[in-house]
Image (tube, rainbow, N blue to C red; front, side, top):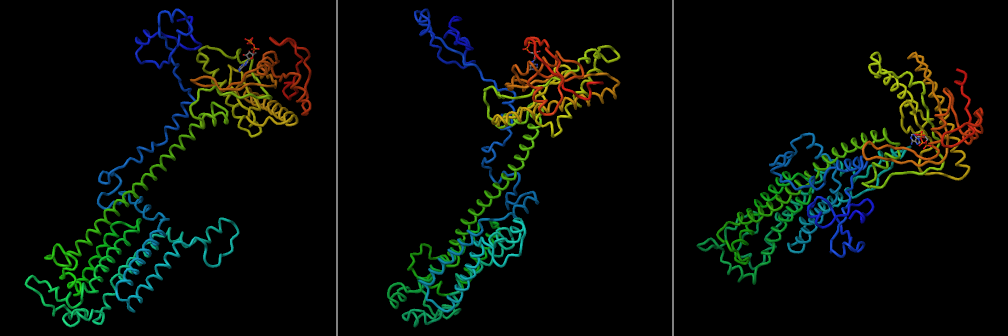
Length: 610
Ligand SMILES: Nc1ncnc2c1ncn2[C@@H]1O[C@H](COP(=O)(O)OP(=O)(O)OP(=O)(O)O)[C@@H](O)[C@H]1O
């Protein structure tokens, strides 16, 4: 089995797999196809699938994505009687501020409700005009109502500006000065409420207004002799009733032929009453309690009007409509039917309001959670940017789990090692120094001062790689993307090298100041070189962004074989610095470990003579 081991995989027999149970994920090893012994003995083999451990950075991304609220649980259907946020009876938010915010939020769908109400009114009009004898009252009421409703519909749907625009200078002014009526209506709770109340009141009145207009001339001639009923509001006193209180319908039928024409008017009014309830209900975002009250008022008003009109009684007392409960009074039966319609719409309204309110609640909660996630994301980003360059941090925050090694290739990066060789002499683990703690404190101060310099905008192209003991390692030009043409590359090389040399001079100035404050004589020895490097992030725990390649090795050697207080560079780097106006003093052939003898240069600085 050992001979058969596949690269980085554990090859096991079936017997071993049975011992292991289901602790590991395996896949067929097909050992018999490669090894005769296994084939001869018919030994089944398996390969253990290596577990994939997400790295620290990938875990960070996972944590962040998990911070987002689980939408499935968020949208889980809760029952209104269990809701902690809503009053179960009236469905108002327990939090007053939330309630007022909910009520005052704009209703962009209001225009549709007005249009629906207008359509329902249109249906009532068509029904009444085609069935009920037309009169001046009918046209005199439905025409202005229709006009009013159409004006409402027009205003609610008008998206453009109306009227002359006041002069405005900026686009922002323009949006402020010109609010289309539809937006004004959608945004104003008072306007919406007024339009709703006016619309449903007019529709409700129009559906029964024609009843005041009945006169004897409209009664079929055949009934006029015996039924003295249609002189509103005269009671239907002259009707002959039998012992059960029912009109001898035979008499009516005999005199009027088949069912008299006015019999068709009654269902028309009842349907109109039901349609009024529908018109109230279509305003979905109006409070369900207000709608319920309006529906009850409308039904009661209509039934009271119907009960005062004798021709409804005649309709009821005849058997032309196949009444199954003739003993029940007309008002009660009509009331029950309309009450059922009211209950139906009320249940629907209540459910719609509950859904709308919970929807609002979830959106508000989601917003808070999203803000928290944003804050966490910001903190994560700051933390990550402290250990990785900004673009690498961005990469790990934005990409999903991947086991791929993160790496970048650059053709021109300037690398610098700046060490304090005499720090070793200063470091002492004596009691005076609290076993080296005081020395470490000073080193920390020095490194912190160096780090502060990196915040300067002119050094934004410089990336601190790490500190190795008292050596500060930096690189400039580690920005993915544009490598550009030759001219661009030369300019970039000059820019990144000059930035590092300037930074080295700043480090020396800063160390000089620390020396004065701490009465020390630390000196910086700097080595610099430029060329191609590979950058990448290594490690699952405490990941580190680092750079590798000959350029890094040479830069390190420039430091290690350099002189305290001087910046040593290679010939190539010196050429670029000289073309940029820096003075470089040739050190001559210098032995560099692992690289042989190289001609190196010292960059002239004000610290050379100190
Ligand atoms: N990414 C890096 N971070 C820190 N130091 C580096 C890095 N890459 C190279 N170096 C340093 O550059 C120097 C030159 O490396 P090179 O591989 O040429 O020599 P070496 O023989 O491996 O190292 P040494 O002789 O110093 O032990 C080494 O001292 C090494 O520590």
